[in-house]
Length: 171
Image 1 (cartoon, rainbow, N blue to C red):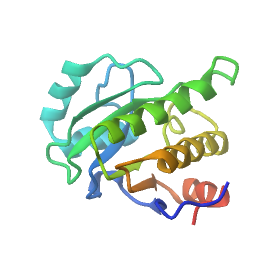
Image 2: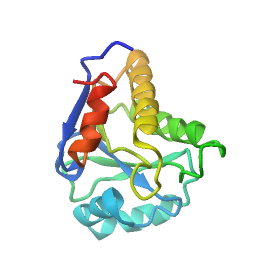
Image 3: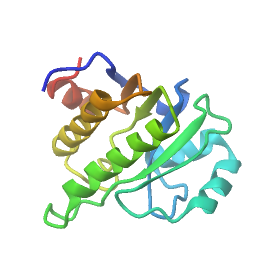
Image 4: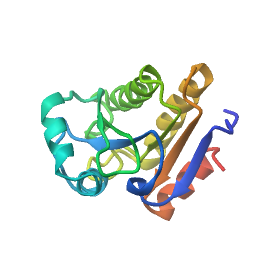
């Protein structure tokens, strides 16, 4: 699929980005966890946990929006990806759905910029290349039809993840 110049790939810390929304790789309870989720909750401050309690639970494949509080990002979109169970339990559909839901929330709230982590590829053990292909497909599709969304950044926590994103067509 051709590269869209509104899709960026970077290695870095998603909690430091000055965008309209960052996406949290959340759990169903929207509670602070480890990895990206824990880092977002820590950087946003304790008010984020209270907002999450108000909109929880969030079923796998869906997303919820909260303020960003102490983050540079105005909002956090909490997207719940699936735990990898071997690939025969609808994981691909659920992962695509959580990206789709997050992108739809951004469009509905007229957000212009947002950033995603590699959802479900950490402690949820979704195979990285498979997850990346699904993520890029959903993001490109959303950008093609977006009225408000101008730029999506995929923020990779490590070089291995960045290399996979780049190998699948991103600069």
